[in-house]
Structure formats: C-alpha cells, structure tokens
Image (cartoon, rainbow, N blue to C red):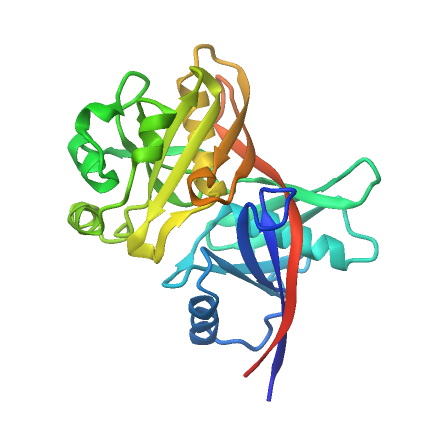
Length: 302
C-alpha cells in the first residue's frame, strides 16, 4: 500500500479559516493522472497541487494542478501555496523556485516576514497577457444573475483574457452590484456552448472599483462548469485582470500595483497583491503575491 503525505494551507490570507484553501502533495511520485484527479475530487477544494520531479534538473519541480473536475495549465493560488509549503519544508529554502507547468515555467519568489520566517510567495505568470474574443454583455449578465445595465463597458467590454489560464473578465457598476451576483448554472452552460471547444469552462471573473480607485478592487470568480461554484481567491484571474488594466492605462512605460479583495461574500476574505508592467517594446507581464497560513496535514493510503 502506497502512502502519500499531504498538507493544507490557506492562501492569500494571514488568518486561519480565511483565504483560499489548498491541498498540496509535496511528493506525488507514482500517482497516476486518474488518481490525482480522484484525489482532487475527494478534497473538493478549488484546486489541489501535486509536486513531481522536474523534467529539467535545473528546475525545482514539476507541479500539476487539478480542480475537482479537470487539470489546469496554470493557476495562481496553487503556485503561491505550493511555493510556501516547499519553502517551509526546506531547511535552507532558495530565494525562488522554478516550477514546470503545462502553461510554461512559473517563477516563485519566497516571501519572509520581519522575523525572516517564510510567510508567503510571489509568482510570475508564465505567459504575457493575451486578449481574445469579446463576450456579449447580456451573456455575462445572465451568468451572474445581474441586469445588463449592471455591466460596465467604459474601460473595456467583457472579454476573454489570459496570462496562462483563460477567464471572461467584466467590470460591474459597484461593490454592491458585485455582492448581488449569483451564478446561474443554466446560463453558464448556454454561454459555454458558444465558446471554442478548448474553452468550455466559461470561468467568469467580475470586479468592481472600491471608492472609484482603479488599483483597489473587489472581485468574484465563478466557474460552476469546472466544479467551482465560486472561488475565494483566484490568482491567475487577478493576474490577468492586473495585466489587462495595465495594458489599458495611458502611457507606454507603465508599472502598476493593485490590491484586490476577494472571497468577502463567501466569508473567506482574501487579499491578493497583483502587479503588471508594460513597455513600448514588449508584452504585458504580471505577478501576484500573498501570505499563507498552515492548516492541516495528513496521510493518504492508496
């Protein structure tokens, strides 16, 4: 009988029972694809991460990320949490890790508190910002249980954006409007049927400006077709959001930082620090960072 150790942590929080919970298997060697998917379904968290030996010995690990229903090419909170877990386990952790993932290489910088204890991580998204199809306002409104008038198009229309994982991103009129959003699964199914075959999850990331501040935001992410009715904190979506807003900012050389609250309506408040940079010569690149807290540990027998 094989035995696998796991730990759980809260990501994008410094308080227990806040943030986005994550299960991490620090050594998943020997697990099959089907077993990893079954384990993720059993935990039933937004994501579960599995750490494997890297293909390239110059890198630190190969990390695979599963929702309860599917494997993801990249996700934010699993990388922040996995980096935190590995750094706490290493007697002399490096300043950064490099993870191999489906979307590419993810650089994870270890964060420390004033006492030099490992407290979180900052990750660089594996890809530059890409912007795809616009999504009709009425489709987004129906999925979120809102009126079309609740969706703002002043800065941008609802659209698909990615820095490694694809999200439909839309701005809503206010934080109060955001709090009223409620996913309509039937509308998500109808919306997903209009998307390309490789993008049928229709993950919807809504945001609102807090007191009109373009860099202080509240967000919610719904992906019921991917097994996530609502996510307490979505690093990859907020990285894409930061990159998108930075791409729209005036000027050719722009470096912006964002404080993004998420999970408030779920009772799991999270704080994500996102940054993005654009230059006249190159693509828009993004990072996200946050604190983590340890929660549980155990053993799985297979």
